[in-house]
Image (cartoon, rainbow, N blue to C red; front, side, top):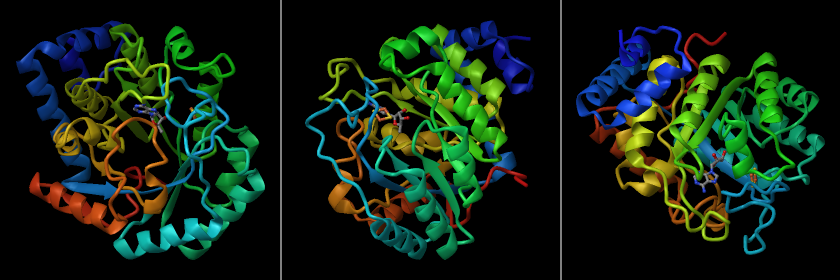
Length: 347
Ligand code: 5AD
Ligand code: FES
């Protein structure tokens, strides 16, 4: 049995198997089969439903300095903002009205939001919207902080591992950050009962077939509930400004591989994919993705949450984004639903 068949068959994959699949990405027939199977598995578990998450980008201050990221602390040109608790709650209110049942609080690693402040925000959101899921995406914290957040009501946590290869991790991040700690955070989050999201950029500088195979091996081992992948897109104020963007095709193939590797995974068709290709998100759905994450942030702040250049949806109202996505999703044969959209058979 070749590696693609092993993957479709749900067998335990070795690094060599992933390398074989990655090498096959040029082969049209194999890729067609991979995509078809990925969509079949997606439909078996989730039908044609597409879950939506309202993304609230509540701070773009960051103490880290990831070399690829436009809001890294070391970028003096970033225009910084923070939302107050009241502003965050206004976003939730609008989101609720529009039909969102998951809110994602995402931000840089901003020391202003102490555990105490975070707990207040989490309690308030969960108090007002007890039937909504709350997802946090605020970077690396201590197990104790994660525990407190979880106890106050946070349901899910997104923390992309970015790359599972030590040397590659070192090329993308300053020495103050480590892959080991990042992985520890992900395992802590899992053991605390969060639905956990990992993931990586596709085509980040220094990425190779080898590092991608390591990413897939790591995902197989961690078994996250969600996987966020999107193409790398250069940001003009970073040292990777002149690097080429990742490939849309390769991102789509990887979405299919991940759908087959983790059949029930919640897999977003990301904004980065929609930024590189006007139909990127639709193509993502057709490759096995089942989630979209439209922006719920106040329009006045959107352009400042600039992780990469030319990010889409920075001028639109939340309602416009939701409507736009709803019709795009329907046009390719799927249905946007107003549900929490938990991992299938979640306790
Ligand atoms: N291009 C694409 N994705 C990026 N991210 C950060 N910077 C970029 C970029 N230049 C992704 C990272 C991070 C997520 C919030 O956004 O993977 O985890
Ligand atoms: Fe903010 Fe990387 S620059 S987490």
